[in-house]
Length: 114
Length: 116
Image 1 (tube, chains in turn cyan, purple):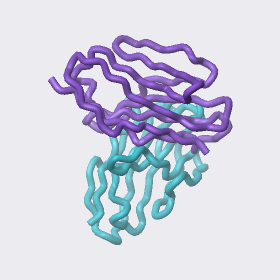
Image 2 (cartoon, one colour):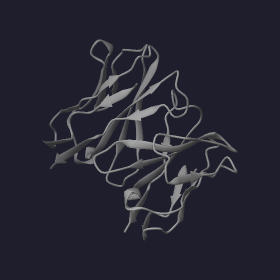
Image 3 (cartoon, rainbow over the protein chains, first blue to last red):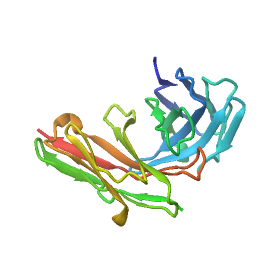
């Protein structure tokens, strides 16, 4: 099992550009999450999904969009990149709700917006 | 509201020393779960341990041990005989049972540096 994979690993965007961060998991987990990690801070939840076709906002959803057409994939879309979106983005998955089950994380995508 | 505080931003010790990472949490729920994750220099977060609010037994796994005390709302992590490979950022996290999938709150992390 590859676990949770993310692409790309690094990306530099210009202000106003758009991009999609890809996330795939092969553990047949229903729950998937997107977090951002800023320097010296913990992880902040952007969006999450409890199953295919179902997504919901987390703590910091502004400027992002997601979709969940399959159990395996959970892409994160940045429509108009801003410097405030410079961060490391982590995708995660869990078997069921995170209140009990640990989350499995991908390797992260380091995004810089200039 | 739930909150996790890791007051130690950075700790630096010499190899083979013991080190304790502090985690203090706040919650109004009686049922909740506490986690520790490790983030090595490679960047990926790795799950270390989960503890539920009804289980206050301390846990030991090799050189790692965890001390859960509800009376002080703490869930501290001790590494005995530290090694350079333990160098990482360690996150404590809290999840209230009544919350849904959006309920995991992370502390800001403690950067542990083990010097050879």
